[in-house]
Image (tube, rainbow, N blue to C red):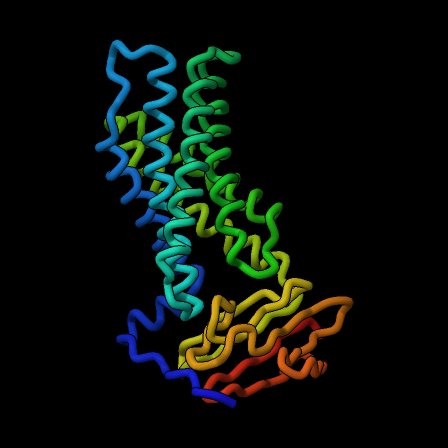
Length: 289
């Protein structure tokens, strides 16, 4: 059909991590959260004599830096898992919107935290966890876009759960360690939980999927749904170097899975176990029988 996909040449350990999406997202989330927290510590702080507004701005900046790094780590992990080229423009967009999500949630968190709401325990636990959940929800919404058939609402729910768990991690560690260490563990936990939640939600709502076999022991899975999973050499979900953009697509709608050739419009029905070959690339359909 065109230039075949090249088999993976990664060391076995790295190839295994790339093929294992849950493990990859857990590692990327934990590392991205921790790294973002470390970098954010260099942001200007509010200081002991800072006004309420200065604290809100300082917290927003801290959160913007941390969230942008965390979002970028998870995004790059997703692109690497899908064997797609990591485009600088896409990373810049994730950095920007991740920073905006962090700025909004961080500023909102500090504003809420500066006002006593309920008892001291409620204020310290529930309000703070809710603010971390807000950051996770915004990041989940952002990261749901590149994942076919995940959906905005599911991304928000997954992010909120991950953010809430990250907030609880920060609270627990903050009881015995300095704030900086607490923030590092909290952001690492948020990233870990966000990566886990995205995977769980993606699998929970999976009715049919496309397994892409790149090489022995190297696979990628995509949820199938009404949003077409595209195959081609452009900004496609299944990136195959040498193919034109949107060479073909696979959709699952009204209980029917179809392979659609873009150039001719030909539609081929598929079912559980159906196999397709594009060069050296093997595609396998999985669906409930």
